[in-house]
Image 1 (cartoon, one colour):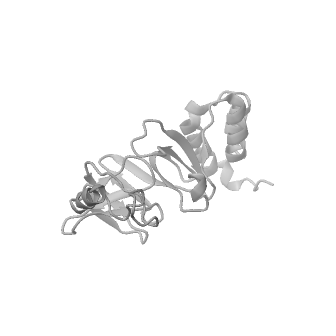
Image 2 (tube, rainbow, N blue to C red):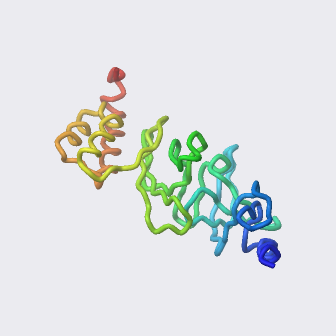
Image 3 (cartoon, helix red, strand yellow):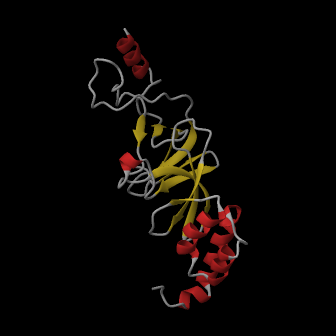
Length: 205
């Protein structure tokens, strides 16, 4: 009876049916169910770079639900399928090199973009759907994302390898003038330095 009810809910579009793995007697290879509440107007970018208008649902976690006019039902996408998407005024992107231990080496996770320069991107990431707790992640260009530490010693150890080639930012980190609340300022200063003296500076190492 439970299985029949879940199947009916999936057919009605309330639950996604790639997966009924947690239902007794169902195939264990089927992914778990996703409860979808309200889709909202937005757009999403496909892996080939094309943008498409749609109604989207995202509340944290690693999947995005998409409903498009003229298309029956809805589809769910993972980070490897959708590089960026927009819901109302919020832009989301893929945070590379960060995710649960069982997905290390995957295509990353979705995060809400807070600030971006040509060299770094700052994201807010919620690990689970509906999670009220979020992490602030910094993604260096071409590198793995890191979580912003709150303690001074940890902040210094994590941020210096990322910003250490910019003298002004590196000095501010070492002297404690820059902390977690100053990351956007650090990103802006780094980008400004790169556009001027940094462009002619010799590479580190």
